[in-house]
Amino acid sequence: MYTSWTKGFTEEQEKDWMHNVSSAQAFIKRLKELIKDKHEALDKEIKSSKTYHLPAWSEFQADRLGESRAYEGILNLLEDATIR
Image (tube, rainbow, N blue to C red; front, side, top):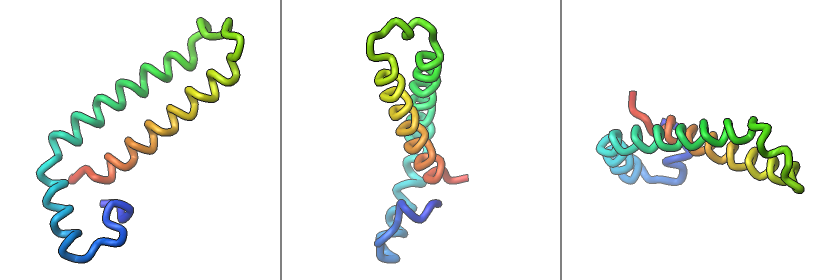
């Protein structure tokens, strides 16, 4: 598990955290699926030529790219919380 999840934890807190994460694997898996779906839909929107007509297209694209990076960051954290 990635250490950012447990940074600053005592040994006991880390043990409790690992137990909670272990118990939440079904939830984590489903959340990852939902976020991946949203990320894929966003990717299609970013690549769509239908948005070219927008007056502030560059700002629209910048916003969408920021959203995409946020999804990627969240997915990375969830991947780190996945027990293999």
